[in-house]
Image (cartoon, rainbow, N blue to C red; front, side, top):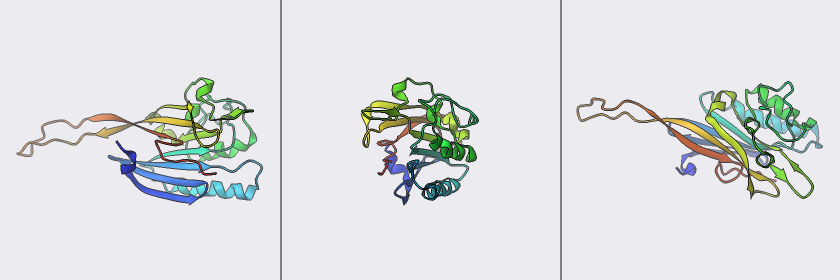
Amino acid sequence: MELRESVVEVRRVNDRLMSIKLVVKECTINIVSAYALHAGLDEEVKGRFWEGLDEIVRHVLPAEQLFIRGDFNGHIGSTVGVYGEVHGCFSFGERNGGVTSLLDFARAFGLVIVNSSFPKREAHLVTFQNAVAKTQIDYLLPRRCDRGLCKDCKVIPDEILVTQHRLLVIDIGIMLKRRKRFDQQGEKVSKTSSKRSKTCTSTKTRSSLVKQD
């Protein structure tokens, strides 16, 4: 399936926030791309970023799926601490202070950092690498109630995106109902059943969301 044919809305909030809405059969999926500010910038400016993301999330209906993909310029680390409901404990590096806003935001809106939910080798956790450092600063967040839709989430090490960022991919399983079949007299001839359809979103090709510098 060509996902671009399922796009019903594209909303660009500013240089750091945009959202895409897709309708796949009976399922409505909202994909948000976010690029957080660096930790050293003014608190008021950073506050406006979180207010913008807050406004986007609040407009997603409870019956719709939500997936936030972002470069949040912070390290959640491998220690869960008081964030057990949003942190899956499988992460890379040590937590820094700049990521607290992300963890608090995820907890407030019932989200989970899904790329911390699957045990992976280091190469499949590191989202940013250059000649002097390697870190995990890109994250994917669905609602906790949709955690079961996420079958896998990992970095593809050989795929290089903008600058030194790597491709972060999530596999989502969506149940699609089959249409009921009727004979010429209007009698139902087959039972309603369902099948699993697999769709993917990422930081680049599959969701068509690329971070803007």
